[in-house]
Length: 462
Image (tube, rainbow, N blue to C red):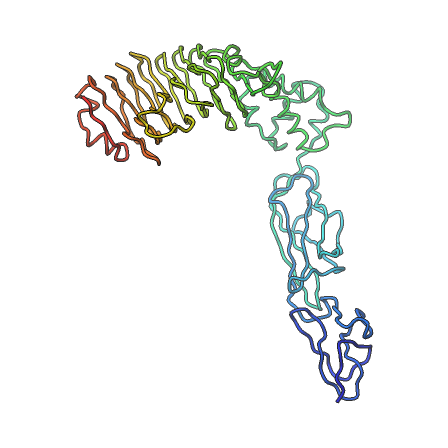
């Protein structure tokens, strides 16, 4: 018997054996033989004592994958892999098919690369409406056919009308055609005159060779909308200089936005940090200050940063804090019918005990203010969440307050409380009824008040 090492030639007497874990020939004994053979050309002699043969030469479990976007408009990249027991298979042919005559592939069949990967471009026939199609990838490994299928929604609206339009009316009609598949959410909120302005901008900015894809039309449309100067929708971004109030060229300060917006309009406060060193006076009726993409207002002076002096104002989705504790409220309500919605107001850390904290407050209402609404706000790390001055009326619902000495201080006011909750660290008291506050409705039933506000702790000082 002769001990045969890990080398081989082209002849063999006995069928070779394999270690499936790494597909290498391994030692065995064979009478009157000087070689073992892996049936491949990956090695020929003793100089390569540990040969690795191509995966397709060995028994293994083949697998094919196919990656396709859920939606494809006109064209899109598709790819996949071929492996055998997780080892990439190089040089194998993959054939793609579909159940729709509306699509074709730039390369088909495709040969896998050294990573076992295949890639091609799926093309959709122009004027194809939204259609669900199935794509199948097929290959053969060790004589075994394997395949996989995926579904995707394809479409390719015609750009002829967009690229042939010669007037604003023709471009507007092309943009508004549902078959083109544009996202018209923002466009549909425009006035008729603004839609004409947008259509004309898209027309004037059309490339000499035309818009190449629907996506390029969408970008042009969005840019045209963002460039509109609309006094009903004014945009502000921290640090912007020389703006005109459009989304594309916003103002740099909130006060500029308030000055420019129409009564009843919205000041869109975009992302960024807004240092506050002078008071913001919200002095136009029925306007909304709306935070978008988490703007932060940072108080850097000993003053009330936001004073509301006009009725019907809404402040929504702002985050407000300060660099150090100031003995001021962040928002003072000095007008009726004001709504504070979804805001987060917090102070910088202060050392315990709370009785030594600077008296900073999220909100204070002036005397006699009616019909305020606080809903969905979060107040924390403040001496007081809200101080409610005499004869204030309104509803305080579904807010979260924690880490304050007093969440809501009621000083002879008549606001109702429903659904408010209390986080960690807890407040010293959640609701405080100060001396002189009515013992009648809405504060005549303390157990009910606690139950309606997630077991609130109530300090009754009447």
